[in-house]
Image (cartoon, rainbow, N blue to C red; front, side, top):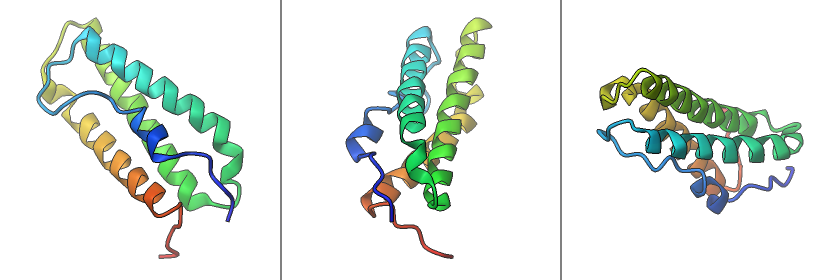
Amino acid sequence: MAKIDFTLADLQATKLGYEEGQAVTTEVLKRAEKAYQVFHDKFLNIAPQFIGVAGVRYHFIAHDTALEYFMLRAKDMVAHQRSDSLEIFGCYLEYIDSYNELFNLIKKAFKVSDV
């Protein structure tokens, strides 16, 4: 199996810094933009390492998409001066799920089951 240059520290550096129920503010948006950009840049840099390991690639794409979707939703909310956390709750759940799946995959040294 190919060596994938992505650690738990790399993943933790891309946390949103958002908690369930928190109002969506420009500060939340700035943190989301930074988290997305850091993860996306790292993902693009290591993408060639995913050749032949599609199961691992899926988890990175899912997390990249979840971060982007949260960031775009926060951007829309801030632009329209809305801050109700319920409007971003679904995006947050997707982010949490993808983060936890990627976290567990990294802990298993990127071993993916055949099932």
